Image (tube, rainbow, N blue to C red; front, side, top):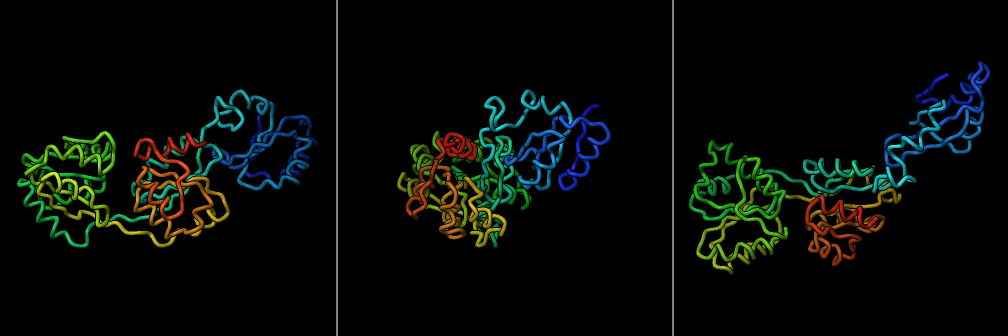
Amino acid sequence: PGTLVFYMGVTTAARWSTELIAHGKPAATPVAIIRRATFADQQVVKTTLGELADVLAPKKIRPPAIIIVGEVVNAATRASWFSLNNPQVAKPLAARTVLVTRPAHQSAEMLRDLHALGATTFCQPAIEISAPTDWQQVDRMLADLPTFDWLVFSSVNGVNYFLNRLLETGRDLRQFGSCQLAAIGPATAEALQKFHLRADLQPVEYRAEALAEELAPQVQGKRVLLLRASRGREVLAEMLSTAGADVSQVIVYESRDVERPAEQVLAALQAGKIDWITVTSSAIARSLINMFGDDLRQARLVAISPLTAEVLEEAGYPAAAVAMEYTTAGVIEAIVAAE
């Protein structure tokens, strides 16, 4: 009596099921075969002990799998935590595979949130982020920091690289003097808070144009320092200069394309095993096009903003979904909504 659980017993099931019956276990005892348990492509096959061997052979179920033997199998519909057929417990991205393309050090939260929704994930960074090859220009700006009226951060990376350099050079937050701080969005503002700094301005819409529009009335005749990547649009500097600001820019981190994807990721994409690809910046969009080319058409693309979607569209790879809120959480919400 009771429950038996056979770990990795698939290839020997014909032998042990026959022996169980020979030693008194009823042939009608319920059995559940569970392959890749807890993953989005989990398989569950129900049968009886007497029919187990016949069921396994044609279905060609291979490890990893466990086999549960006992009346507890009949409770599965009541206690199921993961089911594609039960809307009360089904996860919205179950049986979906999502490729996350953010830099490796920034992917963990997005991967965690996708897993929580039932998705299987791959992580293939499209760009790499690193420190500047030469800190001299940054160090000069750090020395002049008290002379600026506004510091403008347009990314989490900009916050982290600039402020860590400030501390590494023996300075501290007093160097900011009376500078006011602007952040392009909530993630950037949150990064500032980790250094005990609060953004004085954050636009309602998380894009450079909106940031410039909200800053414009406050920067005429003021000195403004933009903390930026080694590449990107000039729209923020141009709009603030037009508004009468004295704009300086400094590169606080390098952004480079990843040239080759992992073989496992490329094979999965070419085989049609990836349902969605996240595109969370214009730079990532361009890198993905160079990296995968026409193979990108094997999956649906989700863009973090209309601007990123426009880059994809112009290259001939239209996005299947666009985030309403220009954040990674918004990207995930767009995928769920499109499903």
